[in-house]
Image: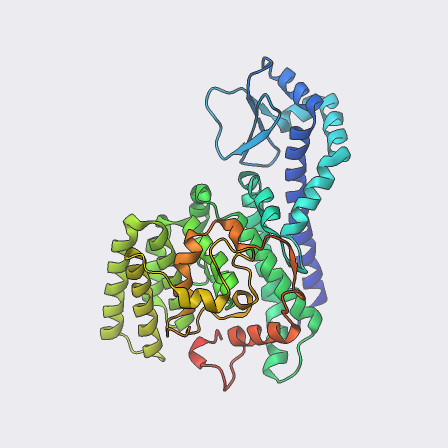
Length: 420
């Protein structure tokens, strides 16, 4: 399959439109927060007395902005009872003066500030900083659904790029550096976006979405975990935790039908992440995994059965050891992770290492990292300062090698790990 320029251009245009939608939503919120005269007009429209808080519903958003006396905006996923509410869409349609005031506020600083904030999330050349992510996380109720939609669009771009890269690498040729870099960068932007949408409070709309998708080709973790790096796996774990207990049944059903080791690995990875986050569910998840392992041992004859059994055993051990509060220092040392470290989880080793590989302790790295990842704040996925790929010493050869182990069968790679 050859990548068609028209397909690529169309997909890139949709991605640009998604990004513009996020910029607009954030810019309007920043304009309302920063402009006292705009706030005064909104207060006057709803006849809210001075000194009383009120709420604003932004256009095309399920979020609610609460305005307090200090002019600071807080973002909520639900309307707060007892507060007056301004529907900004209706207010703008009926009040030209308000429209002009909003345009002025956007042109002063709000639009530029929104672009600057979101540029860190959409950075193609490296990893954003902890402070940059934290600044955006404050607005997550406003941005999360747009972020997840944008992440999904980027996964479509990856689907377009993958066959051409895979063909070149499988034929022993050098893949285009341009396509490889685009793939790698888009993959990490997708991870940033999914991470931003992975708050526990997002669970209602996440699970509504999960109930409408086919779990034969999708899970909350699979789009990232299948790309076979520890940093992406850490982001995938946050996604599983955000979906939480309501998707345990779907993960178990996916595990029971898995015929490919990486599909089983993904289902177990999601289940362990949820078990470590929701300790009251850990015992039942452990029991279900144990039952499925017994059924697998007795009833199924699939290639690489030993590998499946190792996955089951390591997943169960991860839950049991977390309940006993045992740490995984070997894996932390290998990845260069440290508690309260300035680099957080974004080390070169984490960006390049395979979660489906074995550590020096003969454990799957992916399961071993989960106690650390689940206990870390989302900001700790990032360094204290923004870092470029070249500063992390992630080369084109590294990216090609990572792509090969996930997508290109070869005699040096265990066939059981390759996604065909």
